[in-house]
Length: 258
Ligand SMILES: [Zn+2]
Ligand SMILES: [Zn+2]
Image (spheres, rainbow, N blue to C red):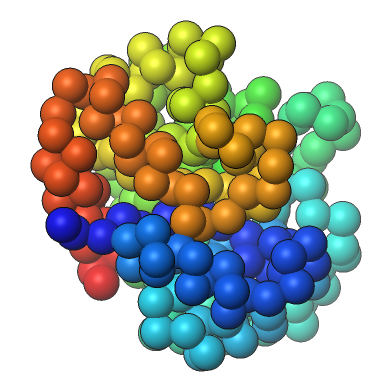
């Protein structure tokens, strides 16, 4: 059977808990997870992500600044980011976006500037964006439309919104990625949205070390568990698991060119 790709995890944050990225990757391979996208959250882990993509053939990187990153970004940092993002195994820019969960929008003005810079970089490098949006989907989609101008695509990661919001993201050419939340019994809205999103526009992820899927809920998450999300897609779509795996593989190839 085709392997799975975990399109969003944080190996560097996981390492702080697990100790060994090699062991994490060995467990992923043993579970038929054949590619992993290691996503940075800010300048604290850019170099770590780069190290991982150089060490492991099956690890790819995303370089960017999370909307809630607490670091200060000077012009030098943006230049470093652009240089790292140009590496051939860095296949996406992110994660970036808007997050008004921890503070109201009026206190998050700086998030817009950071987000717009990363959209411009994605356009310049012709690489997809990994979008994080929390309590902010109308604003996030508006920025993607206004600044992206149809010239950039990407993934709405860890998607938990309704199908109308999913459709707006699909309309601007974005893929929708579901996490372990889709395996939770009480996630009715996510199940409805997963059922709505066409299989050829859908991707899966762990967001490890967070959000472990059932039956690992509450434990530390890791890329090996993305198979649980794949199984959930098959169940919700009423399709054989190998059909789902094969289509998600095509989706990843189309989006990332890998
Ligand atoms: Zn995120
Ligand atoms: Zn993340």
